[in-house]
Image (tube, rainbow, N blue to C red; front, top):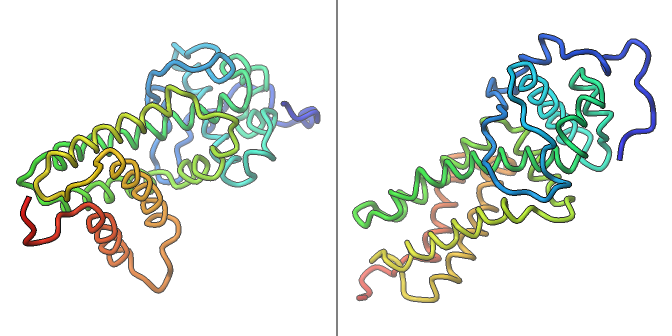
Length: 252
């Protein structure tokens, strides 16, 4: 639903994106790029209307997405409209609708982008976790470090996704499938590592993935001031590994 209030006279809505809007980067200097999003099939109401093919069109879409990150993380998803996003991006709301049918589609594009970064971090750790010569704790530690790096690369994007995606009616199946695939891979890894205890590895993987997701958010956003980041990471590794590790000295 769009904001019924028309753009103010002299506002940036309706203008072509300025150079600043087109070149805008995130607060950490990391660029939100159109090509970062994974290619997944989405329901029509959540899918982009078209893909930008020229540089100017890509820059317009980047400006829209970066404006959405700013607004979703500061105003909240419910209080942000497509008109708000267009104004912040310096484009007309009509330009926004050329690419996105609604703000749910904008949030879905941001979610896809965030999951692509998470996917990359997890993928980088799979070989470590599969290798029985690498201690389980080393693999888990590296995973948490990379997930923390994903969050810290653009805290606004992480905050916008974590706080607002729960307000979407449904997380698109194509994106939800990423998590299931990772859980299935984790279950297979747990079942083959000699340092993992016996048990229902499929269920253990589901629980371990859920705890890892929560712990990664705490590492970035909610570390108590009285605890150091390294100490918190150490305890996070301890919490995750003790759940699945085979007790020392116990035979297979």
